[in-house]
Length: 467
Image (tube, helix red, strand yellow):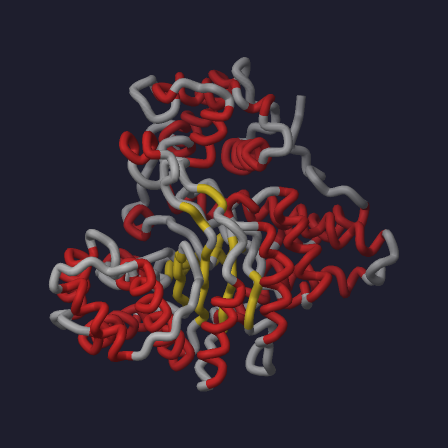
């Protein structure tokens, strides 16, 4: 039985035309991911399907735990085929879960399997995929998905040697870094002093106070810019904004460096000061500033103790501090330093608030200067994407949306772009066929092209040529 057909999730004739004649033909710009530039530079291979599919995927691990799978078959010492079979056996219980869709889209896109993954077909799929993996390497997956450019996620202290190697080689898919300074702002972290030592070495500036920290970050910003970086990313638990001047931030930093304990309020003050300082730097460089927020990290102590971070122990926090986020944006706007900004909340209850807030800070500088970013993490589902699209369309200008990203460490995750494109085409098709949008094929095709590709290229200033 076939599951993922050519018309998968395409609910109307208009949707099918939009997808097949436009969306499916467009290249991919993946402007936020966690792919390793080293793996691309070294063009790594993968031993088997479990290695590439299950080894680092906390989405799949969580689904398997939902289905009562023993941890030995998830992250333990079971054989790779046993783990794959255990995951396959979960499929029939995952109705409505994006993993059911992603998994089958990936199997079809890269391995040509369009049947139903199950305990019965697991061995067949495992053997078939392994035979194909023997002929494929990391870059092949990117080429098969028609990827034109990706932005990795990199710490200011990272040396970027692999990005430089790819640039010197002339690899046809551009691999650019994105600036992720979370550790530099985490002044209350137990590892903060050790991190600043790394940053000092990378920047060639001993970090001893606030001015030297800012100088170290400024130097690294320049190095990232030399490697084509045009955007930053911040992963924030909270966006609470507490006004903090330079003298206060300097005192907090020195207190931490002298071995003192930083209070929760002081940490929030320091973060607020540094976000304003970095926002100015981004605006001066014409970079975009991404803010991801609302996650509660490592809530399960057993998972944290046995497996560490990124093991499936993160969850949705309460609705975000929209007032604090507004104060950050107002502070930057008042001094003419508000950069282009993309806002992502893990809590779907924030959808309307973020879309409306984005509208308050639009200007003629750029179409959609402030973006309500794509449905993120636990919202990265059919329902979550549909809700995000409908909310953004109802209070904003959907045609200016910068579209999808993978936010993934997997070379197979480009199927998520295809998933988004199918859902987008279905939404637009339903709007047109219901009479809520003109049934003008040229207008509809233009919307699809913009949201799936052109807006992204224009918003970040990527020079990629026509398609």
